[in-house]
Length: 360
Image (tube, rainbow, N blue to C red; front, top):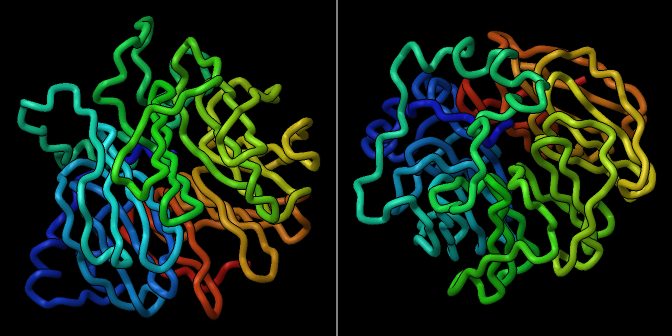
């Protein structure tokens, strides 16, 4: 779900360029849209609309803007270490950095028409409302209308212009990105070259891949989750994939795991499913929500935290068996969550990047 945000970034660019550093409490930062967060050593990096990337060296208290070569919506970011990372987004754009996110270069793109001027992805004021972009009707569980990227009744053959929606990396040389219509690319040389990598996915219908994530405690095991209950598992860091029997036929937006026996898949209309056997079998966990659960993370004490639409924050202190819910003030959609050193979390979404200390 975090991958579907398409909101206009406000005047943050002018503020950052003029002052160098923006405090987390600045109203322009909080009014801007960022979609994903990742840690690069001691640095935190956030990506969002119009190709904007910001970074913080003090756990989100202050932010600087990075130099980027694109203006498309960036949907996900991953760092292999403190220096090497990748960000991905619309038009199958892949950006790479080798200095911890200060500067970025374009490594790959597959726009629908590379010769045409890129459209401005910012929306007008009416379209920016939560009601317009995050209504349950738009993300209903109807098998043929639950996805914001779906073209009803159209069989997609050419995936040019499809967005990349998530990226995973395990070294300074190896990264893999997934996205719309099953788009999948991989680099094994640090981003000098990227190749299509769909391999044995058996995804003839072109269902969208929203997330690629490792199993905590077992780095060779990866999961891809997506549209129409899509779940794949790899036991060899993405070399081969097996399609899993899905317990749910709506959209999954991602997976989060605290150990090899605690894997949660989350998606539309509050759906959260728990597996204790690496995805072989699943049981439903009551979330108390009817809106999307978009992303998750694990705190240092083992607490599972998931975030979603309407400012929902879900927590579990028993390895996913039970979930409790709270809502952030303003109830604006949260698309990503990252633990802070020293306690609390950072969130990214419709209210910008925020610090939440009162996670319970």
